[in-house]
Image (cartoon, rainbow, N blue to C red; front, top):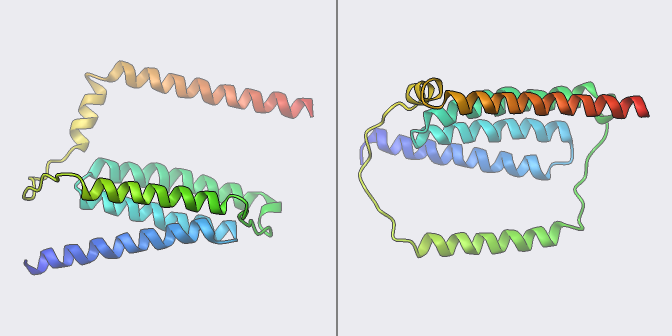
Length: 171
């Protein structure tokens, strides 16, 4: 095992640990603003982990959509809502034990699958960039479904705004 391979393995485990710890903080921390900042590190860590498995398109999508869009929207929503800044959101203990039971069952199922699967172990595959191929396919072969889904999402957005406006007028 070479030095570069050892550094790659260490970097993978460091980013996996950062992702897991920040996800734990995001879920269990009482302050919602700090939880969102922990979610930032979680989503960024997931993007880096995508790079380790040569999923460059998924890593870029993770950064642009989740880290760049959704998280900024959450931060603005929290910071612009005056009442939410001073409120500490606490998790309810009623659902804690059923959630831990479901987590344990899922963990045992995953262990069963991991240890009872015949894994096809190969050498490292050659890395091929997928972003340009996906872009080419979206603009040629899959242009019509891509545009139809865009129109459907736009219609859903306009419908949500009109429903919110109707409810605000009724109040």
